[in-house]
Image 1 (cartoon, rainbow, N blue to C red):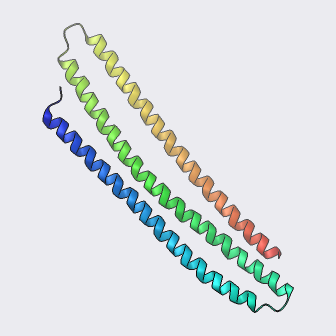
Image 2 (image 1 turned 60 degrees about the vertical axis):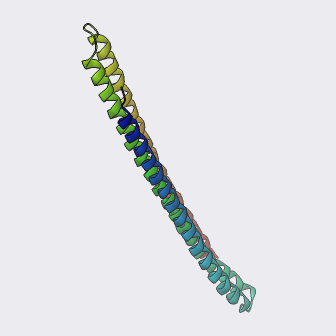
Image 3 (image 1 turned 120 degrees about the vertical axis):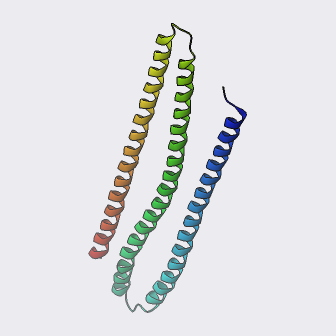
Length: 180
């Protein structure tokens, strides 16, 4: 049976977790805003430079060469922006995942404590029911760990695929720029 102190302590821990996650979410938003401000400043500066360069073009061939030279850096910068965006999102998601995992582990430990206390106070002859209960809890814990491992592997695979696609896009842009 839960005491008033245990309930207050649990509520306090939950509030601290919520405030911690809220802080992490705001940090992610701040990083995103900073990234977008930097990207906008760079884009404005590059746009001004590109406009100046286009105004000084003397013929169509020079214009085509200029356009080709502008495409490669644009692709690389777009890939870099995407990578930064992905890093911010995955970092924030990882923080939420760690908090959820910690909460789940704590809940599992508390539940096991309740099961252990119940088994100690169980009437004689209920050993089989207690063993079944413990076995069920153990199976649920193992299933949870398997899901967590699968999610981690899927996340790692998604990151590897993202890196491959980004690298391929930059390479394709470089190849296209060289052909012009």
